[in-house]
Length: 74
Image 1 (tube, helix red, strand yellow):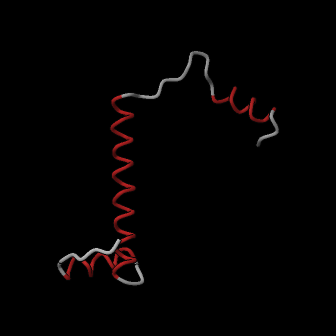
Image 2 (cartoon, rainbow, N blue to C red):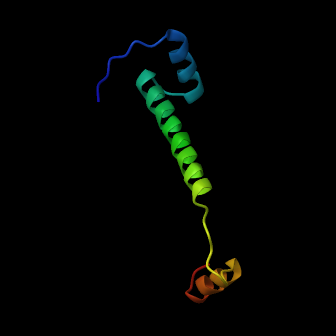
């Protein structure tokens, strides 16, 4: 998508420095991807906080490891 935006020079300069982008477009894409990644993690953390993962009775990591090893997995 082509976008025209008026952004302060100091913000663009900092974004380019922190992302190591080849140009303004690359820098903005990297910064936006990082921001979205962080927001998705925050959303997932909120969801898990509201609805924690519960394991079935009798679950153990050791049982799963044995099952995986029996099926030829390491």
